[in-house]
Length: 174
Figure 1 (tube, helix red, strand yellow):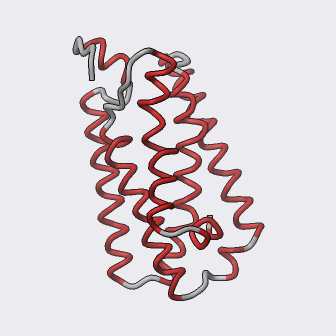
Figure 2 (cartoon, helix red, strand yellow; figure 1 turned 60 degrees about the horizontal axis):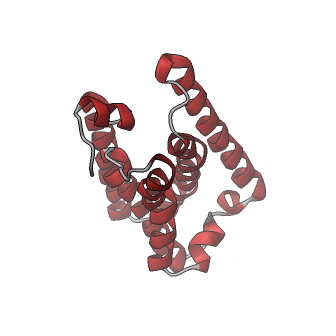
């Protein structure tokens, strides 16, 4: 993740992460399911808050290098595999708790997006707390709060199960 943050300008990092984590969902759903939607607040808006942590980390990296332990292959490998396992487990839990297999884009979200965002956070949060200012750290808490708030809003409104929400509320076009 650190080499990704140092290899591209901020606008490209935002564009790449936005498309991989948010933009691909309605496009994939349109191509596979025949309708375009992403009504989850956490996905459509909260994930932007998470992506912004990468941009804060990029700014810190432009001022000084990351701690050696954070750049080490062992840390990066362990973080990657933990995040990948969390994605797989989140999908298995969704299936086992009666939510079914979901759609292909639900699978993509659990297997690709969740691990990618977690891996990004596993690298950027330590970087910000080790090398960032108190203002950077305060922004992390604010951005985390935004994501948590959007996730809670989704949980209470039923938006986490997007196809069911659309059907229940008789929403046919978005």
